[in-house]
Image 1 (cartoon, rainbow, N blue to C red):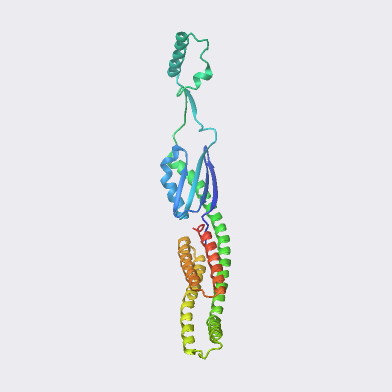
Image 2: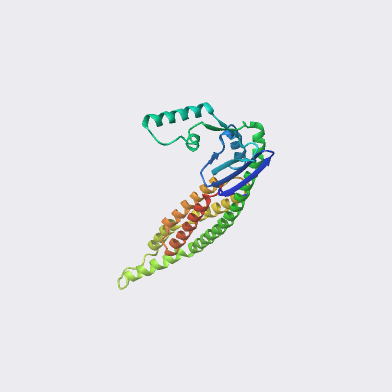
Length: 294
């Protein structure tokens, strides 16, 4: 089953006072690159999270956002550090007297000083937190995989159409190959007769046959078209595999482009040149699409 590397998935799960929301988005990348953003209290679970995601995704740059949902009971307790507050207040009062200032220390000012008011939260039970988090994570992974599969099916449909277009152009090359040599022989004979018109020199048919044979050898693209057909079939087969095939398809496209370039270099007929350009154009479109396949 073909999968795109572009997708989005969300998972939400709560149990008692503990709950998590997990969002994942992915784009194309040569390898699997996981970027996880989570509360510091969950850092110990990062390795487990990576292993779970890696079982379902093999390529792509994936951003994972993990948010802990507070249901009120575990939101924390504010604590006033009286000794520190007294020290700040005394410093402010002393500064007022020394510098003969009119301002009075205010509650707003004192509360802004570091560590005067702190919030203490109960430590999470790592195993319990991961058990709840995993439910949300499994849902998010499932949703992003489903979206990548849907995108992959669209890519597959488009690639098959482009392959069909290339195949039709290769068919045209094969048809042209049948009369290209004969057309060259006729034109060469006509040109030689035109040049020798009015002279006593006779046309050397053996020499013409030799030139035609050289032309046929140089312009023959039978090997290239056979390999192109093979690459087209290989790509179709890989598009139906239930495994990541992005790298394989990229290699096949490189080989297809190599054959198309060879055909273009051998072209001695404007029709062959135009067809090879069309093939290369379709191959480039396929190459761009394949960059998004897992």
